[in-house]
Image (cartoon, rainbow over the protein chains, first blue to last red):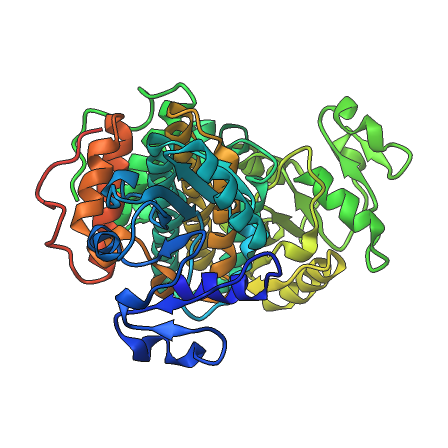
Length: 254
Length: 254
């Protein structure tokens, strides 16, 4: 996260990245010609905002170690409370809602930034920081940010796991997973214009018992079957037919 | 399906759509200036291929009613057997693996066609039909087509249901579901270049018990919780830590 933010902020004419602190200097050595790097926390310079981009567990401790007070300090986590930052600071959260991989370049234009602040005026600083990244920003409260972080697990991690199950299913018949890729993309694209409710199709939505039965018979992997049953039930629940097809009282075995 | 196919084939210079049959003429009345339409099955003309694009249950019956023998007849279903077509025909399947909505135009360039035939030489006809649509075609056997149809349910219907759950979660906190849309798209885009195994991130993959616990506490809807637990377990199973975090013996209540 830190390096993605750095690379994009560095390019912006709207902000100056004054310094980059890391406890392990060698981790940021690569950037030493582009920005002042340091592993000495006592040498931190004055700035409009300090971004703590570390793992969730390290946020609170690091914020306490910062050798100043009453400056704007934000973390970038979706699930850590704003109050876990040391109260000696003006506090906020600058949470980019996107999936990052170390390898790929991030285009922050496609990364909504969820901003949470305690003092209203700090929102303006963080909003302009987001605009320096060319990101859209959204003002959220703690509960909203947590809901987004949780919902992101469904649309990203859990969805990815469904891709994995599909991969296992196709592999078991020696068929190329690549054939599914256009469908994967189209399903996500559809979501840009339709609600998930309106976009739903398929045997569960149609209550096509014959196809559901065929699918369950085809599934040899018990775990795949459990996921099939639960999500079929879920679709039918959403579309008002929860008592059909799948016996909801049946306990699902993992 | 029939109208999507018609519109695209009509534009192609490689094929001629000779006739369009529908039991209910008014359903295809709209196209009467573009193609010969009929509701009289006995008036069907000779052609290289007959495409039966009807609901799964109607395929078999319609194929028997066709007043000729030994011509190439295909259906477009992912789950119906090729042998459910009347054996008086040369039989095949022409299964476009994509999600279709009545409203949206379909670009068949993004639609892989899974072709199944009984007699090898029929593959050539169907392959050139696919290329008239500008689609990629893939030769599959029955089991492979069924595996693809099943896997498609996971990456399309079930994924869409995860979007729905995310919608419910964001809505319950009054936060805009739109904020998740870039993440939804990026998750699918990542799949174009990475395997689902390599693309996985998040608390389940990291075995971040603290965040998982927070999420489960946050989830008020029991059904959302069940999905969370099952898919977290699934990710951990895939990534080799199935005994951690989630007690797999615990029966999941729907």
